[in-house]
Length: 209
Image 1: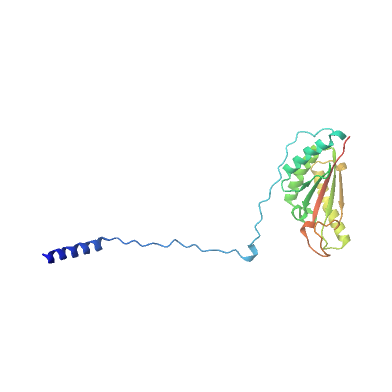
Image 2: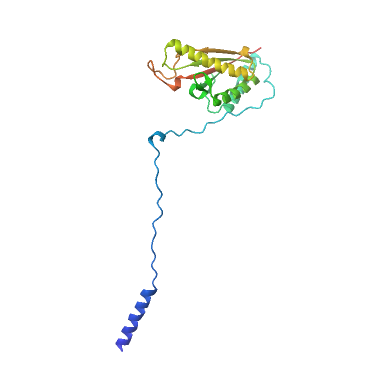
């Protein structure tokens, strides 16, 4: 009696082993990891914010001494909106813009496409707020001699002034001066290349009357 039972158990066990399914766990596919060469690491630049071209109808109108603060308030708000990313300071009732030379110029005193675009947007605001004068001051670093620095910054200031005039700003409102390596933003020794010192500063001064 025991033998048939044992035999039956063995048969059932063999049948179970033959019908058991085995699953293989596949490893996830591996992808090659590419490491950028050293020359490309850390060089990614944020996208440039383009100026917002204003759409003015005519000018802001006459300017009285009593209305200077309100007039320059409006211009300050517009410039901050138009020239996003460009520092706009407000010492008293004067507006001061700082334009980085390496972005403004392609080489030497030749304006880049981005520089022309920015100055075109600025010119639109200057035409609207036409009861102001514009002082374009050029600065550079200490790489060259003082005479070379003056010549370089004068050429760059003149190029900016010429672009504003070409964009319709009254030439009588604009003065351009090259100040060489005076008033360094970042103090350095002689012969030092410092981008923060290569810049154009534009001061916009109200002119009531």
